View: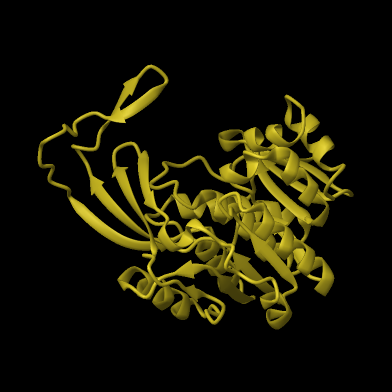
Length: 320
């Protein structure tokens, strides 16, 4: 088993669940929650309190695979932060590297969920998870991870650079799943890719880093920077290469999505959890897809995370 540090956000997710007032209404290519009127009171069927954030979701994935999981994230000493720590403790995740910030609240997302369509709108106050510059890369000297798994740091390229270079210095490998804020500065972000061992992006994100219209073109160009690249494309599946093997894959299972929150985290972290457990590149892609499918079939960003011991059925995957 591996020792894996997750560097990313930690949030409390509060779901407002309704079957009739939060009905989506199409307006051209977009949709709104059409029955919520300004100035009225709306009765919600159910509220569910969960935890999430890229750092939390990935750490839970690693822990359920029996890896040594460590979370580096910012929270506050408030009820939301306490709920996050309680969940992490229950999952057996090392919380000793979490920072408790004063004068900040723990990041919180209010998720409006339409149970009929599975569509949701997320209102987020990032609070303590808004910034990551307070973290010291010297923590990696203490943690001594085999892998550093990084989700979005809200565009903080300086912190990314510090942690990536320290990981290289201590011999830890890096898997990176950039977010919208990092991709706002693609030229500077591209300079950091030389430190990344596995890159996980979707098709539109890949197109911001390198030119190309097709998955094959994008994969080929990103492979010039990074040996292992995974590019997902929603319901179309995705493509991946580790330099020696290249696979085009579909989706694991076509089912009704109950809640899409955490799907990307489940895929990326699921892949790393499986491959660091000694599984093949091909089987790790299948597990990543299965893990993502399981997560979207349940309410919450991490309730459906698998352990890696479940029997998996075949899925469309072809070696190129």
